[in-house]
Image 1 (cartoon, rainbow over the protein chains, first blue to last red):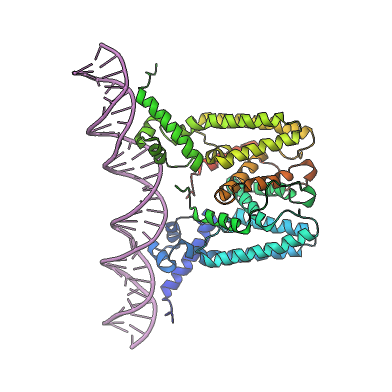
Image 2: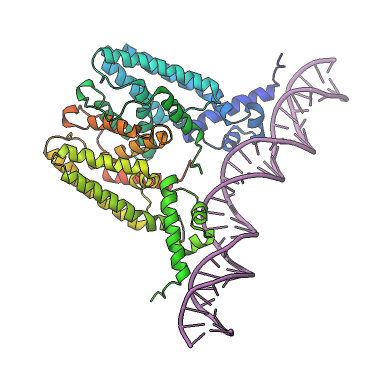
Length: 217
Length: 217
DNA sequence: GTCTAAGTTGAGGGCCTCATCAACTTAAGG
DNA sequence: CCTTAAGTTGATGAGGCCCTCAACTTAGAC
């Protein structure tokens, strides 16, 4: 079997996970691994030894966080007696998460294929979202032409607003989101100029964002 | 007086401006200056000699482009008999510009204080936007609580969607924007959770985006 | 206390971008 | 043509990040 880790190794793993959680939250998933190492009081080499690279580290840190927060959002949404309120609560809580945790913003709006556990969690999350949408659709509250494939627009938009205003008007995203939500009510619906993305287009777009570390060639 | 430039110098300036226009459009305002130099068939040093740095180059290239396109949008908007349609056309044309020209996306949503001409143009643009908004407000078509300071939300959001989907669903931003616009009609208005940004907060947020070249410390 | 495999270290090679400047080239006036 | 100031070049140093690996340290078994 995998021989048990030495005590110092286990302790370093803990430290790195802890440092990574904080650094990811504060600076996003692209924070230099060297900053994480330093924060953990460990050499860069150790991070690579223990995790093998950024994606594995992401996969060690993010899934639990995302899953917990998404679950919370789902529960609160379904507890809401009014289906529209449920939908609004769901979206708002996830956007709030994005606004307070840059890494969550990355994780919700992008895909990192080699972070397998995270990908799994996020895909499951789409199914959960479907439940909330269905309920709001059936109540006639959510416009009929809004689909799960449109959800990333909300996350991308809110993340963009939150990042832009983080230092100057940290609650601006709430106003921007409220404006957008008003456009999603069935009563606000006007014909749309284009069909939704297909599921594959959506995933491809999110994956491209994950790969595009920064400006490419 | 400033002694006239030598012919080769003038020619190089032209080439660099041309190369920069294309490179900015394709890759955004953060494209490496060396790529621009290469594209212009010129050494990196020449770009620095002639322009002195990225901001000056931006200022040499972007203002004319932005001004022309904004003017076009204003004209088309005011030509629209219905004030709501005018507003929608205005916003849509600027978002289309963002979607087809990454540099325009940067310029409309950010501020680069040391690119003075560009800053001036963009500030003037806000005044023009006010005209369009006023007309739509007075017609009772645009929700009363939507202000000029809310406009950046539209640009940031649309730019985020356009960047995300550029390679996979290049028209997705139209759908996302249409959803958002439906929330801006007076008839869709529900109370908002927060006041608009102040003008200063808006400018500060845009400036921060311009300075934040990429992930900061 | 000794020993050794497990673990850590941090310098270093690779790659990228910025910005500079001494040495070279060339336009253009005389 | 020759001259020379204007202009260009591209190698270079500085800074940042990634990832690796030979040398060193240490936990923990005996």
